[in-house]
Length: 145
Image (cartoon, rainbow, N blue to C red; front, side):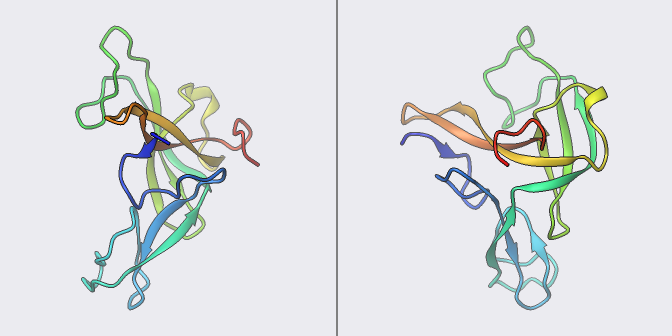
């Protein structure tokens, strides 16, 4: 396989049902994303990697109508760029994840709508495959149930 996550500890991979990974501090209970060993709340260095799941609720959103800056650029140019949704998805653990949304039509986005994790190709990699990133789509549009 030559497709890899853009960073470790973002999501489980490879799998047919990926989930986001977070960190949970065993001392204060602080949950972070992405998973990391140090706690941003109490500064201890022994947080555990936990699964945050693959479904959540859209907490807020906007449509990005300008080309992103590095390192978030893809192989788009000003001529090929298409606006896309960006939002915060609240996961069952209570943490809100900032993410690209696969919906760019503001008439189809609603605060509180159910969302589902999707793994997508982000950019080519040196192994002849792709770097993978996560995004969210509406639960009704999703290929997984």
